[in-house]
Length: 214
Image (tube, rainbow, N blue to C red):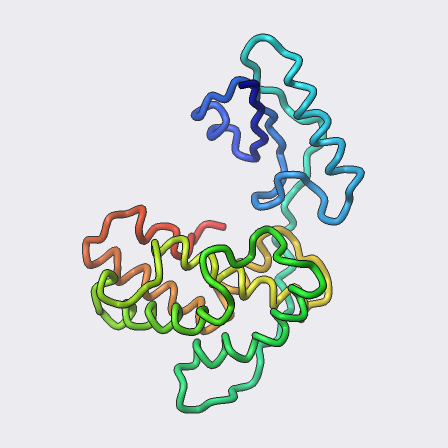
């Protein structure tokens, strides 16, 4: 079967050795380049599919470079507390639900924002990570799936809500940095990651709960 891969990490393309690869020097998370620019994205796809004509393995560089402007943090106010008896992270997630629903109605489940769980399951998943952060073994905490995948759904839920609240498409990784650095749930995920690492859990289980280098 003829195949072609598009990637934004050069070492990853060479490491996986696809028959044909297109390296796009774009910000991570934006493999087709400019958000909401169908013409630009189509040109990237046409370039990638054009490699199918090559009969020998090749990795080609796309001819446009897009810098990741990380100097502008995402301005996204968080909802006020609604339930003083709930953990702040759980209350925060519930408070973001209206914005998340508006974003889904407007954009659809863009980029698979929530894949493993539905939005109703997000608060319970956060509660499971709260228990991990407090020292409970992750296998006993009730995480509804592989920890890294569940954490991706939680982040996707938050970032979709932030997209609606901010009212614009943020710079690449800005939504993630906002989640990591400014939300109560981001704080919980950081503590859960550290607790799993300190407990001796295998690195792939905790490393991607909250990547720290984005």
